[in-house]
Each structure stands twice: as C-alpha cells, then as structure tokens.
Length: 57
Image (cartoon, rainbow, N blue to C red; front, side, top):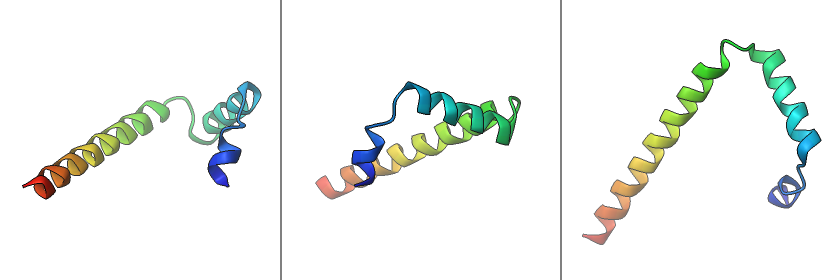
C-alpha cells in the first residue's frame, strides 16, 4: 500500500519535501547527510554481494 502511494508523488510534492529538508537541516548539513547515505548504501551493496557469493559456494 505504501509503495502504491509513493508512486503518486509528483513535482510539487518533491519540491515541498526538499524545502522541508532544507529548513530542518540547513544547506551546510545536506552534503554530509548525502555522503553518509551514499556510504551506507555502498556498504549494504557490498555485504549483499558477499552474501550472494557465499551462498553460491
């Protein structure tokens, strides 16, 4: 149900989300947050890949 509602997000909703994030965190914190998010995703992909390789063997 959540994914169905998520697909209905349009341009105005995205702009509103960006404005709220800027107000909450400020412009200087956002690059740090994105770096942290990126490294977290990278680690997750690495762990997933390692687990797949272990299950193949």
